Image 1: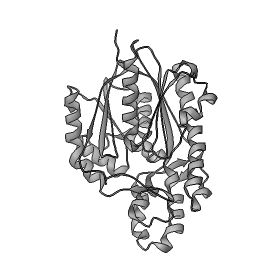
Image 2 (image 1 turned 120 degrees about the vertical axis):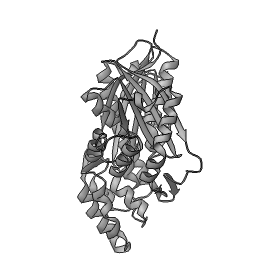
Image 3 (image 1 turned 180 degrees about the vertical axis):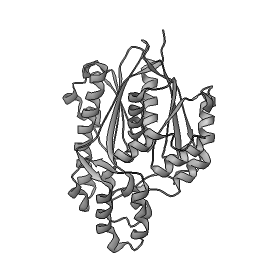
Image 4 (image 1 turned 90 degrees about the vertical axis):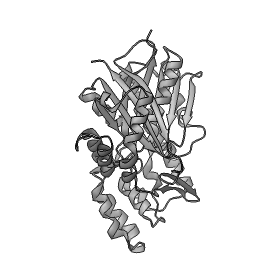
Length: 350
């Protein structure tokens, strides 16, 4: 029997409020420019991201007021519960399963704090069994889509025949800060949106798309590249180094190293499916992976339509690639706090 975990279904969801990039830029100018003389110089970041619009869990006016932890947390709980249910129900419907068929739930999120965690909060609404295994994971950031899928795959493989539901959701817009007069805050304002993705994995009975192998690389002394700083007002984004430059210099060797541990090489990969951090990161990825410029077309489309939603974003790209038809071997890649590269090789039978 083939015990490789198979991707049974994949679905995505976004909240109801759509924000156009030029509207976000003008709102940021109104709030920050009077107190931040460098704003006009940094405002070009909004037009350089490749983003047309993105989505948020709260109405636009909510973000125009300064918010603290209680308001942010309530917005996170309400918004994340709705996104979890939306994405999970879509994945269940595609798999022709009921929530009571799920044996394990892996939940990945880094943009809010919830105890009890989200899968417990929606358990009654969803109809999960009382004996379902729960695996909540915090802190993976933008790598969470790939790393979380890897965790779910391992759990499915450990218990063939069981159904593992993986849900990742990020509400990045809730970290909007009025008090942070920094380039890092402007970068965050120009990039981040909210979204969710869900997948169901099962091992033991084959499947058209199977998780072939997975691997990660953690670079030493890179804690300052990306992450959260926690203070009385909320999360504050950390961007201390230029990520596109880091990607150009380090991602190619890292992916080659990870693939070698999978007994593969870049030449064996028919399609890279990458987390698109922004337009400059996409260009850097093409350069680092020795791809022709424009190869990462789905990545550019997703960043344009949704912005950077952190962990779920790469699964939006995978969903689009699946709809167009996956080649024999695809490799998912994402970078996140740590600083970490995470990869999964998917083997697809036409």
